[in-house]
Amino acid sequence: MSLERYDKLPPQVGESKRDYALRLQEIGHEEMFMRKALAYHFHVEVSEFSAFFNAFELARLRHISMLRLLFPNRNNYSLIKKVSKNLGISDELAELWVARHNEVGEVTFIGIDDLRSK
Image (cartoon, rainbow, N blue to C red; front, top):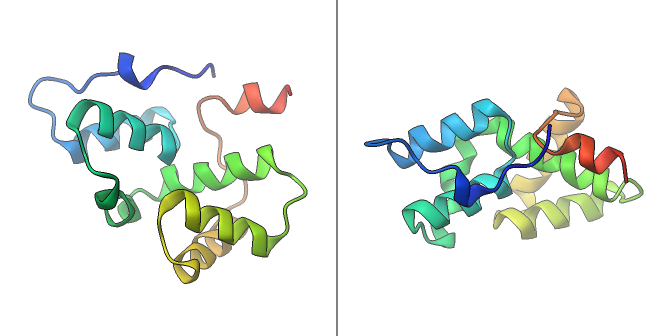
């Protein structure tokens, strides 16, 4: 799955932020890609993202999968800190998301093959 450019994936006419994000999640994007797309097309402020994306489990788990592929030797503490920083969430919430990822395992996303080939 080759990575698309967020600026080339505009919302459909009349599509809300939520519906647009759901569509991007459904086609396989991870949270950071979706954040960039929402900021670009809807001019969403960064401060709005952390609460908004709590409802997008697959996108968030894909982001954690991406971090694990990028940094396979990162320990759990370091991963929690990175997730917290990247997503603008508390360490406690990041710990819950990392634990959820541990339960689910790797979640595929657009661009995963590119990371695996490095």
